[in-house]
Length: 298
Image (cartoon, rainbow, N blue to C red):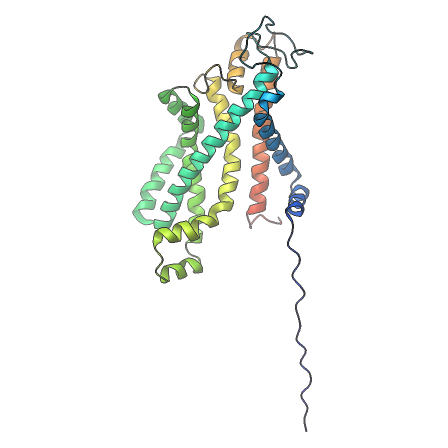
């Protein structure tokens, strides 16, 4: 009588334990040291902006008799032409730069993302008309468009945020639209349509969440540009008005008349702007390499 041999079934090994957030953070730092440095600069900027009242040694808008005092014990970074403490003004200027940068980036990215979502999902004439409008907006140089809008609306904090956000809209729309064009062809989107799910629910429930990766990269990358445009507008007198301590306004006051006799008026606000933009660009590049599957591991 024939006997059947024992059947050996290969049992797969246990799944590896889920990586903790600390391990994921360490892996990001190890693979992207420059991105980690950029993230550190952004965290430092955030901490300085939140605790500006604690870190400042003087009232940033109060004048004194110590006009153009060099850096020293009482005034760490010196004073400006009105006797105001430069350290306190640079510290409080981080609040303006962060508020304008984050506000304009979020407003422009959300508006542009919705345009890209509707354009990419519906297609046809809607996509054609909206993308031609985005082409017209994107054809204009960033600073020129921001200057025109800021000059038309007038110098103020809300107007500066609005002017810079309009510049970000076409770039956000292009990024989100490119993702939507690929996502809408996936099988689960076709299955949702076959089940009778409405277009609005498909777009918001199934398509939009899958664009979060490129959206985060877009926000991080555009933040540095928004801070730089705000500094340029304030430098030209179309951004944040006095008495708000803006980095660009500090450079505008010091560049023409006091750059030679008081170089600290130009050096320290310039360093602050450079570090903020440098940090956001480094972090944005690292997040792009991490969240984009095509670049992962390259």
